[in-house]
Image (cartoon, rainbow, N blue to C red; front, side, top):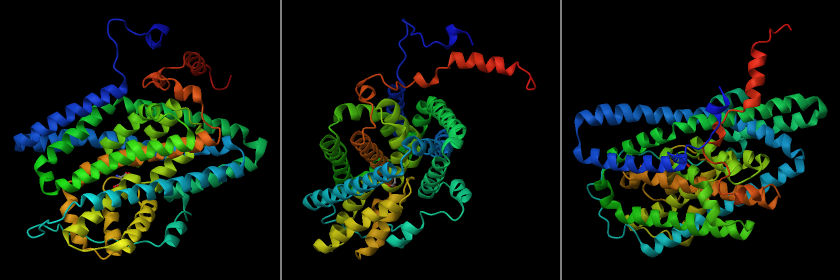
Length: 457
Ligand code: ASP
């Protein structure tokens, strides 16, 4: 490739939209198309275009993101551990992240129960005629079981099935062993850093497909989820959305400012791509590559903190999910006319915080975990059928909140550990969406010459 074709020289006639803008436009278009298709209700469109074409594109896109998660987490965390170089600092970063994750989730759900108790969604609701949908209850794992499960019996199996906590645990042990071998690990560490760079490039390549992928996902969801679905449980939807926004825009931003002094407005602008991906995919796990990229390249968080904090948060930190569980519990208690009392609500808080540790960041699992919370306070599990229909949209919003919580805590830890580059944080163009696709020209020439050199020379 010549210098002219590979240089990102701006074309003065046509200003290129940033990827974030393109994704937002795709999302809007997806909503419009989805609402139109939902109203038309045409058999051909629903089968071939929506379930067929949109379904295929959406699945390919989400799979593309998921295929990055395990190798990206492994290499970036490995580089993170070897980059920190001191096991005590590693322990401090881990401890701080864990404490902050639990703290933000507990605050979120406590506020949710408070708001929902005041607004009182579900009072006077008539349960007769509601299809209970055959939802089954989930048994609560004990704290001991949750912690025991962190140690994998077979790391290959953990990697193959994407068990994030086990992967994190194994990678940290692996990184510590690499550190202990000292100078002998130098070349290996260089190779791991190189692989981390390669993974980041693959993230950038997959993200090029984001506008079309996001369009397909959103159009499909809105075609399937008619507006009518919301009417019977409108009070629940509005209370939940309001509480999620309160946590997102007020609570988390106050916590960010108080604990780190970082500017919440800059933070919000820089985390937007990750929020959009989380909203479109409803999966914190699938969003890990984008969140990781947003906090490191756009905000200046050092990889040594981000590579641990983001996948750890995507696995154990679910502020939005806990908030949903709080509002849903109050809603269902009202529907069934059951008074949970202070003890009941405290149980809900404890259960939801615990559940968030064991909840994988994939679509819909928050609702399954809700059965566990309901069972614990003696509410009928069939009540879930009431909110099942609207859960997909609620899942999209709460996942955006979950991912924002991960980035807030990671930024606080990085700032307080002196692992944040403020020049990058304050630079509005840092990590601009297309920059990563540039080809390194020197490296390219070197590679080309290597290719023409016989291996034996
Ligand atoms: N979809 C959520 C997430 O990935 C989990 C849930 O609440 O269902 O973070």
